[in-house]
Length: 138
Image (cartoon, rainbow, N blue to C red):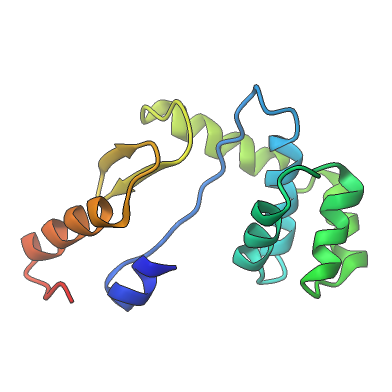
């Protein structure tokens, strides 16, 4: 991730779930990603799912876990149980409360950027925020 590579420990990247209602597999996919996160492989799973967006049924979500080397028994139990359903619902509610209506959405020190943003837009806001705090940007 370019932001992390550029700014290192000057930034904290937090991913929150906002499964859109018109996407009938968004909730299950968000839950699967959180099950991967429980094993420390959120971003690896995220990348695997994005590379295979046309197949998001439960069997495929479980196969992606195997593909990246997760403990599949633990992952499958997590996914089947709905362990993270309430956490994802809370993320969604928080997003709505702060004006999120779609994805992606970004908050940089409370500054809201909606929609897909080029790296340069994100870097500009991050630089402004770091400079305001007296931190060297790069």
